[in-house]
Length: 249
Image 1 (cartoon, rainbow, N blue to C red):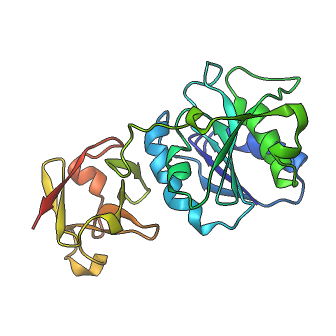
Image 2: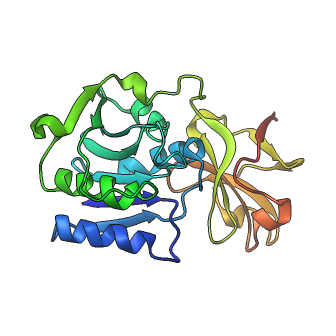
């Protein structure tokens, strides 16, 4: 399957145009919309979010990941292989956390191939989507001839980034705020502080009263801040990038 992870949004033509290329170039291959609203223009936040969601997909899944504020600039397009999965997108740090956490040895290739038509502002459609389709059809960079160049992994690495990001990285449609922190890295007797408000860690929503704040391990292993039957983003004026601190109880 091909999994789309972008900041294109569901409104407008962009996600649909990418899908049209995928269906043309890899007919019959399922295309899954994972995120169309990943952190916009923010490869760092998007990197921690992406890493939390890859494990549920089988080997040979192709992730077409485009959070690319430097499109048309000096950043290189490429392909990452990590734990048997493929990741196609820019070398702007978006795949740093996936590569860092994989069990095996990740490998990176620069994409040398260019289509006849290449918009300077829409590499997701013109460059990354055709490459993702080729991978989904069974072609690999090892068999791609002059279209790929084996490149050092340092190309995508951001070694100064922390293992877990103590910031809000995503706010969903219910106003729940995901952090870039894996829940199993933080003792359960630790409270969070965000926007000057302490937030008690619990197991589930029903552990607090309606309207109360809570922090819990979400379904993909990240610490998430919510309000029981309310909106944490509105209550605390949260946005992507807000800092999170820990309070030892």
